[in-house]
Length: 152
Image (cartoon, rainbow, N blue to C red; front, side, top):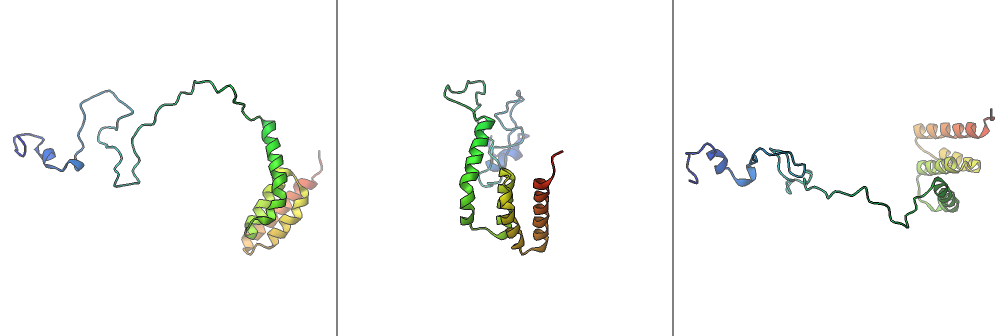
């Protein structure tokens, strides 16, 4: 029986078990099982994803009674508090001139604090790369245009 050539599948039986992909009998599709001709993830190749299914989550379950989603007002309040606390700490960050410029611009745009434009300009002037410096200076001009435009 084993090792004899009286069977059409004798070639598959003589191959090592790791190289054989057995086709299951015709069944209905089951997403928890690999597709025919595939195997579960090969541990010798970490780039291969595992085909182990994740447990289903019940999305219809109600939220806990003490769950209060953050409102837009809550988020804006937290943002304002974080910006207020962050302003005096910015100088403690170890940043390149480009990073300092981007951080200062983020602070300007997040808080509409026109007083920080001078700091952003100083950071832009310290950027050694001419192309990055040009873009930073253009961003400064755009911010100044934003602050100085007349309301219609």
